[in-house]
Image 1 (cartoon, rainbow, N blue to C red):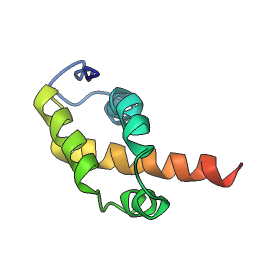
Image 2: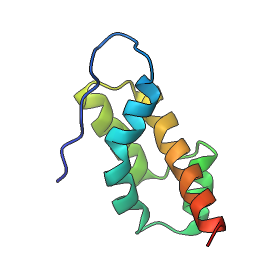
Image 3: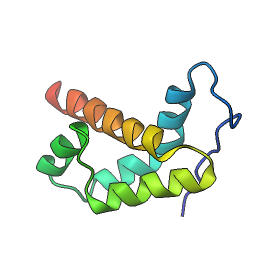
Image 4: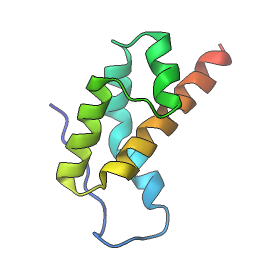
Length: 87
């Protein structure tokens, strides 16, 4: 299992949202391989399937807030959709 990076601080800091995305990206991309395109679209819209909700909870355990992890996952899904549309 990949270890998720912790935030640099428990306090807000510049680009914390980007740090959260970077912490989750590798695991997100691995999990996304097992999802349907509809799941990716739903995730981009903020409706996380159980496997990605579990990733958000893992992020919360290492110090990210659940909300920022869910937002980061949704943004990663949108980025994936954008990449797929350019193929």
